[in-house]
Image (tube, rainbow, N blue to C red; front, side):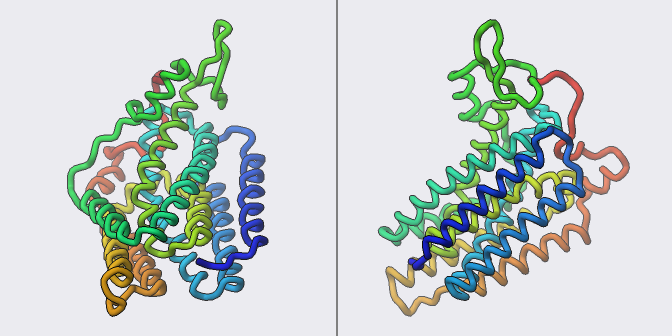
Length: 334
């Protein structure tokens, strides 16, 4: 485990809190976020992550800096799947585009809390029971299989466990009430559909944690590295979604690239566990190699997607394709 000075933990916490406050103040008025605004915010989040990585490199050493960068980039790449799910949830609940940032803001806060819990448990389990790495590898290989198979899994945000539980705890009205989560009707407090959307977003993040937590633990078993890298990747999710909202379908090879990355990380986990439990002669994959593989696979997936557009994308250019993610279809809210 790394000997992380207390001030570095404090600097990380202060950066996250100040960033969230600034973001909330900048978006206190509901409005549709365009590409330029989203790109500027995305650049800010990436810049903060890179600067913090530089601090980690200087304070904790090149090994820790490389592990942080690898874990952040890995989580950033895996979070692309979250963006597709965000689009499905927003379309299902017909969330007005002006209120989508508010939903994602509270979704990010919940994700920071839950990821902290899961990663802490994961680090504790791995440190005491190394054999669990084989189980984590199996999870990643299964995720690889799901990404590579042709048929798509059905996803119904309205029937998710979190949304069903919310409806049992408090009545949920049919119509939105601006950006509010609660309103008073006939003297009773009821929730708006916006709160159900937040519940669906949180439930989706819990599902994706099943993949991302084992993957990041293959890069490092240090709580500081795995949590800070996850946190900075999560903070940039909202801006990344609004920046790529109309381009997600173009990156059709990205799922194949993510499958390669997950399978590679699965192999890395098996080698790590074998090195500790079977024989020190079993080689481990160094962090610089992992970082290089992730960068090459991601870049190759994006370039190949742009050079070889999918047939569905070509049809969309003529106006016959599907509506872009985030599209507001007419009609009443569910």
